[in-house]
Image (spheres, rainbow, N blue to C red):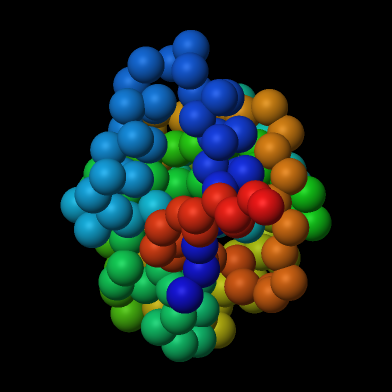
Length: 172
């Protein structure tokens, strides 16, 4: 299980104070974390910047097996957008998501149908995805850039559900 540190949580609340709907959405999650899921999403450039600038409105995760987020993300979930090797950089709300098994024909159909929203025009990317057996497509809305919020990590997972916030340590 993965938890946010109390310090990171406080930084998120401070960063969203001027955006009432995001601030309230985070507080609601904290009070009822099972009502919707908070996901930590690790993104490489240029895709993170594309999302933050609203050039990319669909996030995709292709794989040979059913690893996260396959089947675990749904409308209303909250995404914490983190730069690979860097800080938290934004928030997004899931508008809709689909997870399904795919064939090479399906990969080509996804490319033709959603290329603009995925903001992926690299032929090598699509060539590599022809070997995928599963895909999750996530439509994003209400993208909100954050000031850089440090979030140290030790694992290499690209998608991590967040289960709650660690309590502040006791001071002596």
